[in-house]
Structures are given as C-alpha cells and as structure tokens.
Image 1 (tube, rainbow, N blue to C red):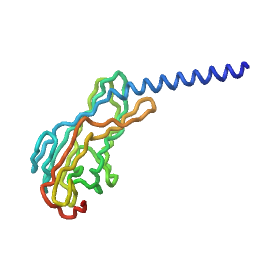
Image 2: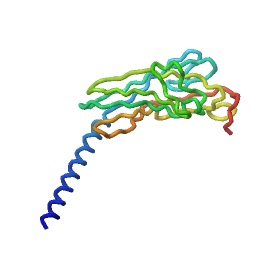
Image 3: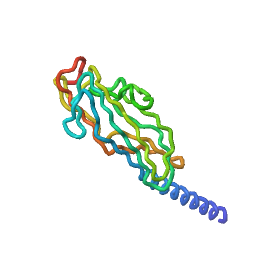
Image 4: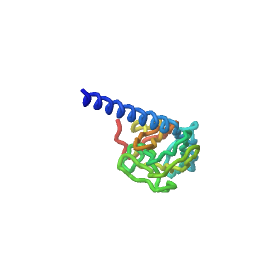
Length: 184
C-alpha cells in the first residue's frame, strides 16, 4: 500500500511540475508580438496599406518588428515566409538582398534569427520582396494573391517552441497575364 501511495504522490508531483512548466512557458511565449510595417516599394505602387501592384523590376521592403512584452527572455529561432521561396507560386518572392541571409527551402523561405530577446526588447529587420517571373496571383489573366497572417516567427522558452504569426497581411496584385502562370 505504501508503494502505491508513494507512486501516486510521485505522479502527482510530476503532473504539478509539468503543469507549472506549461503555464509558465505559455505566458512567456504568448507575450511575443510580431508586427509588419507597410511595404515601401520602388518600381511598384501600393493600392492600400498592404497590397503591392506587382510588376517587373520592382523592389519592396517590409520591416518586421518582434517585441517581447513579457518578463522572461525568449529565443527567436527563425522567420518563416510561406510560398516566398524560389519554388513558390506567388508573383512576389523574397528578394536576395534581404538584410540578413535567407534560407531557401524551395516553396518557402526562412530567415534565420537565432537570437535571444529580453524582456521589453525589440528586434527589427527588413524583408526584401521582388517580382517573380512566371509567378501567379489569381489566375492567368491577373488577380490578387497574398498571405494573412504574415509572417510566422518561431520562438522558444524553457524547451518549448511555438510559432507566432504576424499581425499583418501582405497582398499583391498581378496586373495582367504572366508568362508561365499555370493556375487555372
């Protein structure tokens, strides 16, 4: 009987510890915010605060800010840019002149950060966007494509890692037929 009680007490203690860890990591990670600024473009115009009229030769920059509103230091792993890699489908892609090195994963692109972010700190960087020859946004005749929410940031605390999504929306208008667009 003593063994059963000891085992029960041990299991209860483990459950309390895991529960406390879960609550503490959730509180720290949910206070991470990802903000995207209005794109700044050369060679393209904006229809509103987040819709780029994509065209050949354009270069746009989006400033992303990650803020830590909590009291714990967290680790920022990387930023995921879905469908913005070299094999992505959008008429806009992550540009090669991004302020930091992009990892091309084919369809997606990631920006490695690998940096701790202390309580109350901000981390800011730029993502360059360029025109993708043969990309599609809408259909063969043109249209609007985009990502919302955008981007996704991997953050971790005490061995728990989650993905926080940005508050922004990024849209782009394909002005007309694009060579190689295979969407129907």
